[in-house]
Each structure stands twice: as structure tokens, then as C-alpha cells.
Image (cartoon, rainbow, N blue to C red; front, top):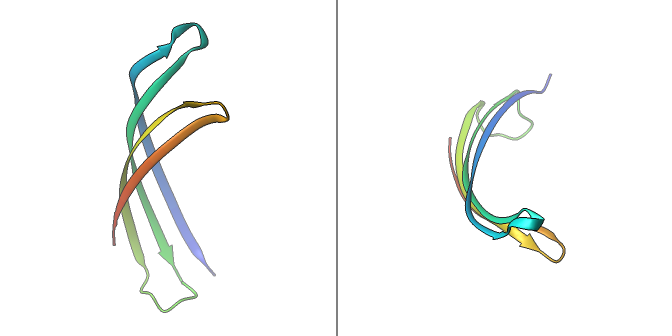
Length: 74
């Protein structure tokens, strides 16, 4: 049986108000992730993987655009 678990938390802060009437702003934040992978199909050992990410987001003509980067361990 293939099994896994996943947990994630993200935090956002409003960095700059752009158009208050339209509620548009630039946001910045970070996220924390953790996952457990067991009985894997590939040859990688079972175990946990942890990650952290940082990103910035803002409005465009086509919707919200976010750019981020991350790091994982495990």
C-alpha cells in the first residue's frame, strides 16, 4: 500500500497598498511544508521531507502573479 502525509502552512503580509478602492496590494510571505512518503515505488528510502519557501505576489491584468523560491531538506 502506498502511503503519504502532507502538512503546509503559509503566512502573508500586505507590503504595499496599490489601489485601495480595488483592494489591490503587493504581498510577501513564507510557507512551511512537511511530507512523509512511505512504501515508495522508486528506490529512494522512505522518510520525511521538509521545506520552506518565500514569495512575493501582486495583481496583473490577468490575475494575481506570484514569484517564489524554496528549499527542501530530507
